Length: 79
Image (tube, rainbow, N blue to C red; front, top):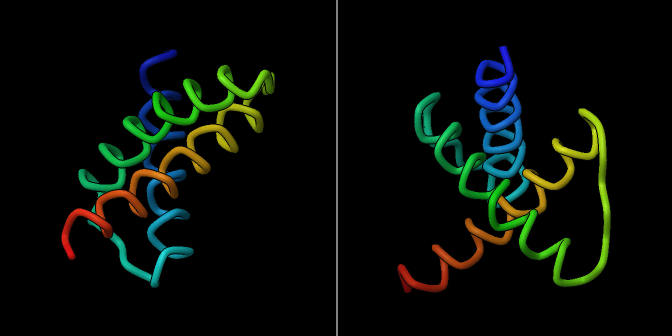
């Protein structure tokens, strides 16, 4: 069941980040990948900054922030 929640949080975070960053979505699979990688990146960033986020909302916020950073970095590389 934890894997299903992980995928749902990744999909929602990836979709939200795609909407915030120039309104681009990546499709269901792309949103899940962006959200999962964003969750890992966000967890690393929050840990480096000493910020702790717990629970479902905390996981979603962490994944969302990481996904935004990831999309921003991808945009820099594409230029």
